[in-house]
Amino acid sequence: MRISHANVIGAMLLLVAGGCMGGTGSGLVGICCGNGGGNGGNNGPTALEFFGQPNTANVGQIMTAVEVAVRDSLGSIDSDFTGAITVSLASNPTGATLSGTTVVRPVTGIASFSNLAIGKAGTYTLRASASGAASVTSSAFTITTATEP
Image (cartoon, rainbow, N blue to C red; front, side, top):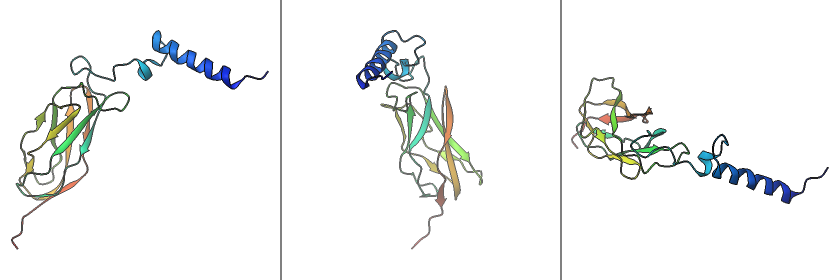
């Protein structure tokens, strides 16, 4: 028996449309009809990621803004999420302190930490966390001692 190309496409469209209309048990709700993982109140974010990684800076110097994005269940930025995101030192071999604003609420799905500084030279990573999401660790970065020219 030969199945025409048009019949296959029609059957697939029917499956997708049926899943979007009925949804329950179809497995297709997340494709077309889901709310993307969060409204900032009832649902937490699915994932966090360092959108803007920490950079090398001198001891006590404010780093370039570190940005953490909130991702929904489909991997898109969840612009509805407004829960608090916290950054802390994940690796801290020198016993340094992280100063600046370490708890920020995201705006359109991105939390910007614009005044972070570390008080001792060394190589570090940051951890970002939010209620309902697994924490994520940044790339390693170095804090150096300023040298006079």
